[in-house]
Length: 293
Image (cartoon, rainbow, N blue to C red):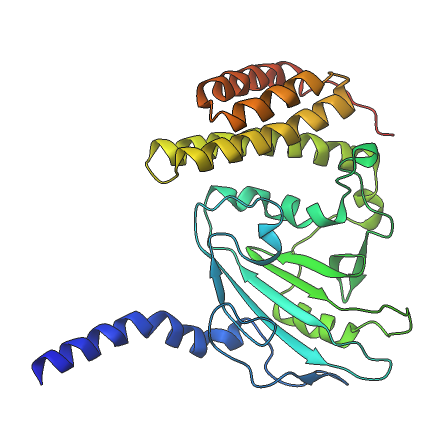
């Protein structure tokens, strides 16, 4: 009997995060119908089961993950779908609670990532249709959906409209803005301005080298494998080189090939030597003017 109680206690302790998640999910999601859209049910309280609930627990969850958000903490993403019909779409809402850490500084920068082109000819520039809209005094970024930050919470509302005949799910956007007011301050004019976009591009170059330093520190602390370190360093340095070539006119072909070869050979020493070279160059050149196409 005593052994049974101990086992029961251990199981209860292990389940505490999931029980807490079930109790607190309404802190993040609106668990009722909104306007013409019906809450998709049942809402599950287990991780990793979008779009019918949350949280999904990850080193970098949800929309932040695609921007190479650094895993120095554990984020939680909560997802739910509201079912429309007729002219009403079925929006998916994802709310990510950022857990804090040094990467707080990049939150707004990172949520803009998917609104910017990864193609060399328009690298880092806004994708057509990206804009800042203001709803009930809140500024949010929109294109084929809506995204904003509310301090250290990221809200993303997406929906599919293949035929272009769906109405915008504005009631859902308004409901979530009431729950998580946007802390974005840039107007659409500022968002599309030359100065703002130059700053974003330079910040992205800075962030890629910052990510390299963060991965190095994690490796030195015994929290990353050498193979993972090499992959992350090479990938971030390649992104840096693409921006360097595009906006500073520094030919990158030879270095991109060298990085590829170092990565294949697991040559960490040579990769680290190149990283030091790029950081030195960046410190000397990052204040120089660049011209956008």
